[in-house]
Image (cartoon, rainbow, N blue to C red):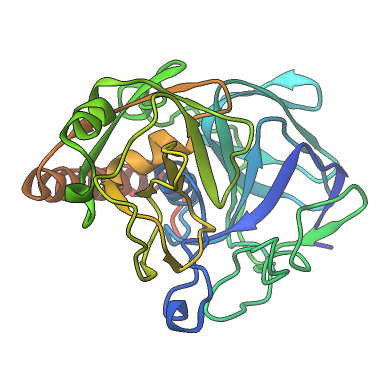
Length: 328
C-alpha cells in the first residue's frame, strides 16, 4: 500500500498547497503555505508542480513511517531530520524505502518546514485547493492538523524511485533567506498610510517590533512603540490579504498571514512585499521585525527577479534528474 503512518504529529502539521483562490468574495480565506518559497522548491526537487500540496511543519516536526517506497524533499527552516535514526540533509531529494521512519525534530533556525512527496498526497480538492483551513474545518486531512495514528496516502502508485541516494541539492546561497532572530521586512505604503501622524509614520520604520505569542497562521501580533492616527474616525471594512499590516486602536501592528480574513476594518498602514512573505513566515514568537519602505516599482522588480530565480532552479533540477536517467 502507498501509505504513510503518522507516529508523532509534531506541534502543528497541516496539509497546504498554493492556496484557495477565487472564493474571497464569499468570505473564504486563500490560505495555503506560509512560506511559498520553501514549499515550491521542495515540490520542484521531486518533479511535482510547484503548488502541489506539502506537509507544513511548525516549530517541532512529525515522525512518519513509510509503508511504501517514496521520493521526498524537505525544505524551510533548519530542523533536525533523521531517517531511521541517521541524520539527513534538507533541500535535496531523498529516497525513502518501505519501512523507513522519518523523524523531523525541533527547529533550530526559522519556524516552518515543508515535506513534498513525488506524485503528491492523496488529499481531496475542496474549492480548488487541498489546503487546510483549521478554523473553518475546510480542506486538508479532515480539515484539521495531523494527529498520531493518521494515515496519509500518495496519489500516484507508479512513481519510479531512484535506486541510489541523491547527492545534489539546492545551494546554500539560494536558501539563506531566513537569517537570525532579527529580520528586515520590506513593505510598500498601505492605502491608509496617510491617516497616521507624521511621528508615527517615522516610528513605524525606525522601531523594532517583537512577534508575540498571540501569533498564528491568521496573523502576527507585534509589540513595540504604539502608532497613532490623526483622527479616531471609524472606517468601512476594506479588502485585506496576506501581508497587509493593520493597526487597531491600541497602536500595535498586526501583520495578516496566509489564513487571514478577506476584509478588515483597521487602517492598513503598509503591505509586505511578496518576496519577503517567506522571511516573515519563518519568524517565531520572540523574534524581532523592522520594516523598510520600498516603492511599488521596486517590489515588482524584486518579484520578477524571484520568479526568474525559481525558474532557473526548476531548469537546473530537471537537468540533474536527466543526468542520472530519471525524469517524469
